Image 1 (tube, rainbow, N blue to C red):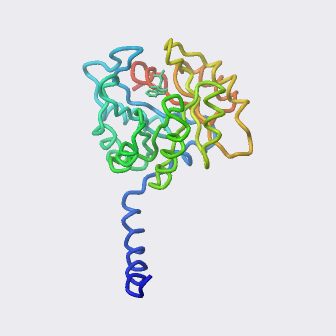
Image 2 (image 1 turned 90 degrees about the horizontal axis):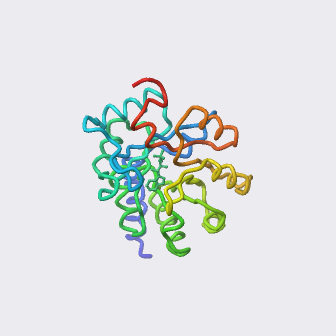
Image 3 (image 1 turned 30 degrees about the horizontal axis):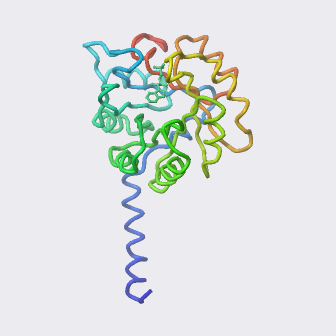
Length: 244
Ligand SMILES: O=P(O)(O)OC[C@@H](O)[C@@H](O)c1c[nH]c2ccccc12
């Protein structure tokens, strides 16, 4: 490299690290590693299995405050519009209102553009659903996210998904989805059965997703040993935590 290019690069590196700091977000994994079972509270206005979930009076600011008051570890914000009535603006809003809380972009990601977009709308982490992606897509999208300083929640539902997820280099965060996406049925036994098959010692943070409705469900999942749970419907519809 010519001398001047080398000098410019050194100078530019300093400025770039400042620019990166401006976009840096709190870590979802760190938040999940705290003692006790951690809760990720989701903003889910609707879903293909339940139809409309949010009442007409739904106020996202109030809902986020309710989560924060009850010490949730992170927000999960659906940004898919057609089936889940989500929007990118919800995510940006949550991140600006509570900058200390990590935000997971809950969406159906298959295009590298969506990963970059997650960064620029303010996410701490993105979801990759193993079943939606080929091995090569999984590995490439995962790497792109890490390169952009985003964390990745890799979602699995069965042993085949788990095997494929474990082939992703540097996998750090796994989500066991209790919902069967063909039947929409949820069963916590999905977590009960898959959790022991995840190799210990790889330092993988593990959460259980979907179908958590009661304090007993929470206790059961805590007894299995997951680091956290992701809850949507029950938090949107009822006061599963403390009264709103
Ligand atoms: O509303 P529930 O049953 O608490 O589920 C929340 C969350 O796990 C669910 O919304 C979900 C899990 N994986 C997903 C992937 C895409 C969209 C949504 C999801």
